[in-house]
Length: 239
Image (cartoon, rainbow, N blue to C red):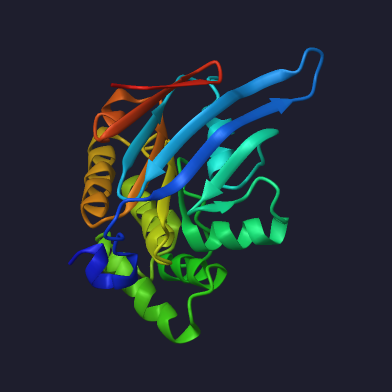
C-alpha cells in the first residue's frame, strides 16, 4: 500500500512546481559584529524532489531548517511556501501554513512519552485540522504505512529507536503535507535502524512525497536525488 492509496489528495500535481522557494533569503543575528548565519540564498524545491542539505556543525543547517519550517523569519529576502509569501506574514498565518503544508521529523523524535503511539499521531491530525471523522482512520493508515500497525497501543518508551522514528514519520505524513522536512533523522539510530528509516523515505518519495533532509552524514545524503552543501552560511548545489 502506498501513500497515495492512503491519502489520494497527496498525489503530486501533473506539472512540477515549486513547493519551497527562497529568494535572496538571508538570516543575520545581532552582535558586534553581527553574525551572518545564512547569506543571501536562492533555493527552489520542486514538487516531488528529494533534496539533502549537507553540512558540518555550525555551517548554517539549523538556521536554514528554521527558515524552511517557518520557525524563524529571514532578515532579508523572501520565502514562498507553495507559492505563498511568508516572510512578512502574520504569525497565525505562518502557523496555519506550517501545520497544513509541512511534516517534521527530528533527530530526537519528540514523541510524547506518556501518550500511546496512536495518540501521538492523532494529535498531529488535530493540529493540522483534519476533520474529526477522519482522524482515527488516517492515523491507523499512517501507522500501517510505516510498519507500526502492531504497536499502536504502545508507549514510545517501549519502542526501539527505529520504531520511534517510524512513529514520528507517521505523525509527519498523517496530514498529507506538501513536504516532509527531516532534521538529522538517523542521528540517534544504529546502522540497521537508519537503513530502515531511509528505505521508508525512499518509499514515501516514490509515492510522490517531496522530501528535504538536513544531514551531515554522507550515507544519508547519498539516498537523495539532489544535494545542496552549506558551509559558513553559503549554499552550493552539487552538480
